[in-house]
Length: 457
Ligand SMILES: Cc1cc2nc3c(=O)[nH]c(=O)nc-3n(C[C@H](O)[C@H](O)[C@H](O)COP(=O)(O)OP(=O)(O)OC[C@H]3O[C@@H](n4cnc5c(N)ncnc54)[C@H](O)[C@@H]3O)c2cc1C
Image (tube, rainbow, N blue to C red; front, side):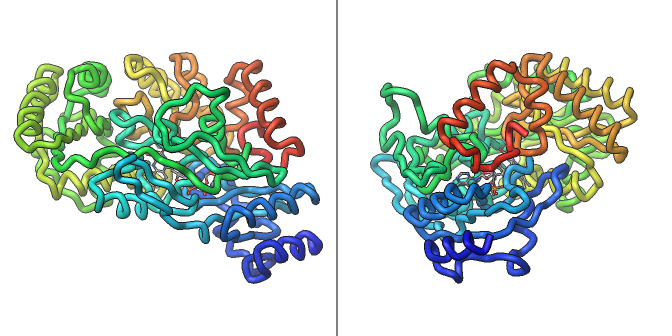
C-alpha cells in the first residue's frame, strides 16, 4: 500500500491523502443499521475530474478496491469500503457550477449537498425537487442511490431529473452522457445506467440536473383514520383524484407518537381522536395561486371525509413545516427507540393493504414489533423492525422482503441494495437479470475494483 499511497499523493497532493490513524472513523461507515464500519487503508480527496481519473488509474494498476463517498448518509451500507480499500471522497468537488434559469438546468459537482443546491436555486424561483429527508446528502450520493423522498409521488425520483453526467470509468477514462436537453433517442442511455448503480459502474464527477418551477403556495392536511386498511384504500383514490399531491405519507400511531414526541410537536389533534386513530395520512398540496390552493384544500377535505377519515386538520405553515421535518427525521426516532432494521420495500400502491397484512402476520409469528411510516403515494414503506435476536431478525427480513416481491414489488424503493440487502437481491431477483447486471458491471469495470461487495455480495 505504500507504493499506492505515494502514487496517489503524486495525483492529488500528499495533504489530500489520509491513511492509517489519520483516517477519521466516519469514512468507514454510513447510517445503515445492519452493516458494520470498515476502516479503509486510505482516503483521497480529489479536487477535479483529472485527479479522479488519475486516482482510478492508480487503483486499477494496483488492483485496489475503490468506494466513492458523498456524505455517508446512505442507509444500506453502500458507502462502507472494503478492508484494504480506498475511499474517494468528493468533499472538495463541491461547487454549483451553473444555474441556467432559461434552460431550467443546474450543473453541479458531486460533493454539492441537496441543501446547498436548494439555496442556490431558490433565488431563481426554481427547485431541484428531490427531498430524501437528509439535506446533507450529496448529489453524487443521491444520484448513485437514485434517491426518492416525500415529493416523489408528484415529481418522481432522482433519475427523472438527471439529464446528463460526467463520469470516470475504472480505467480512468472520462465519459460525458446526456446533456442540457430533456429527451434523447441516441443509443443506450448510459446516464440512466449510472443513476442508481451505487458506485459500482463509474464515479460521477459532474451532473446536469433538470429544475422545476418553485411554486409559492403550499398547504398540508392531516387526516386520522381508525384503521390502517382505510388509509391504504384511500391512497389510490387520492393519487387518482386530480389534486396531484406533492406529499402523500402515511404514519402509523406508533411512529406518529415517536416523531411528535421527538420533535416536541403538538398538532392540535384531540386526545379522543388520537386514542381511536390507527394511522394518519399527511397530504401536502402546492399551487402557484393562493385561491386555487384554497379550493384544492377544500376538495381534498371532501375526498378524505368520503374515504373515511375520522377528521381533517388543515395545518398552518409552522406546524406543517415542523411535521414534515419530524417525519423526515423518523429514521433517527426509530434508531433512538432501538430499531434493529429498517425496511424500504416498495409495492404497487393498490396492494399496500395486502402487504401490511402479510407484514403483521410475519411480525406476530416471529415475535417482532413492526411499525412505521412511509411514502404511501409511491407504495414505498419504511418499516422499523424491533427484534434484537439476530437470527430471528434475519428471518423476519427474509420474509418481509419476499412478501414485497410476491406482492409484485421490489426489495428497495429508494435506499438501494448496498451491502445490507445484497443477499436478498441475489435470492429474490430474477437470476437471469442479476447475471446480465454482472456482465454490465464487467463492461464498465473489468477488474471489479469499483465498490466490490455492493449489490452482488
Ligand atoms: C434521516 C434520513 C432519512 C432519509 N430518508 C430518505 C428518503 O426518504 N428517501 C430516500 O431516497 N433516501 C433517504 N435517505 C437516504 C438518502 O437518500 C441517502 O442518504 C443519500 O442518497 C446518500 O447520499 P450521500 O451523499 O450521503 O451518499 P453516501 O452515503 O456517501 O453514498 C451512497 C452511495 O453513493 C455512492 N457515491 C457517492 N458519491 C458518488 C459519486 N460521486 N459517484 C459514484 N458513486 C457515488 C457511494 O459509493 C454509495 O454507493 C435518508 C437518509 C437519512 C439519514
